[in-house]
Length: 146
Image (cartoon, rainbow, N blue to C red; front, side, top):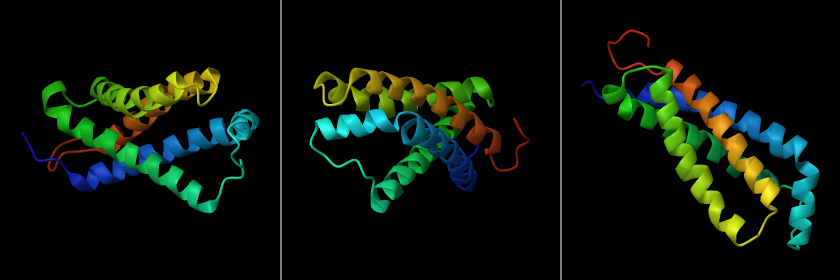
């Protein structure tokens, strides 16, 4: 069992994060923008997103992408390289980073359930795409492509 190639984890994770951030922008920044604006106004909050908020959202995308590829690298010796293992890593991160994270705001009815369900569904799609892209980049030191 080789050591985790941290350079490839970061590289693959940044690619995964880029995919996640693009999908998040398309879904939340464009498609659902009016619904998010209404939800924020209902909470008495301004909807105008600041530069610092955009930076935090994008950093979150890159961090969760790196986390997904790191988990892929960690479970790869047990499950083998490839899409099935990337699927397992993506689902693990999705469960913790999306489903469990969105459960409290959904139960507390902070945001409309429709937005929460779309967030969870899109989260699974973006995690599967991002983690597979990151897994495609990842190689253990001295190994051949998956």
